[in-house]
Figure 1 (tube, one colour):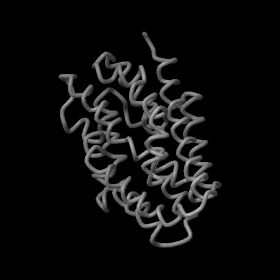
Figure 2 (cartoon, helix red, strand yellow):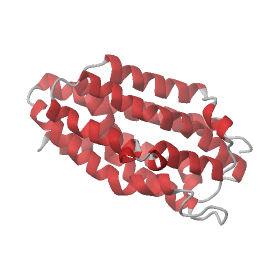
Figure 3 (cartoon, helix red, strand yellow):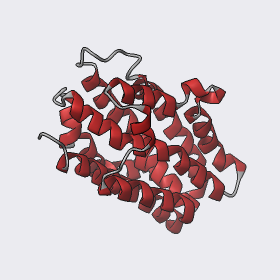
Figure 4 (spheres, helix red, strand yellow):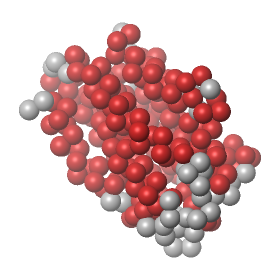
Length: 227
């Protein structure tokens, strides 16, 4: 079996913990009130702020242009493909404001300890780890299932009558682009998956990223106000 297909199957039980997480289920069912949606937006704002930095840190360690290319392409899209009004951070801020956050609250979002552990461990992995570990984290460990994850979130947000499609555009746009991001990253990694050692490094990065994301969602569930 192809290494990446096999890896996807091995990661399946871990990914299912995310896609079936109680907090995501609350989002999907439209269970959260506006205060709780603001709480969710506050924590995800921290992750969203870090994500381009994950890409930049990973790109800095990649030794060749061909392997680096999909990361740079992803970074360009994150920054609105040159139009900052369409940057993913701007789109997320639009969502955050629609659920009650002010710009000052967005700029100074206070992470839960679990959120902080998630983002700081990921930035350190991308900055200081082997470049294949960071590609494993960002590819099979993130982009592989982002479309499914964001589809769940978008489905729930559609149930709130005070939200418009423009308000949750951040989630919608990722549903359409992240499958392509993942396939391009796999194509870039494939020439490197030529030894037991390199395969182990890719797999370790993917598992680490997923476990950190599970921690992120666990923290949101455990600290949910008014539960």
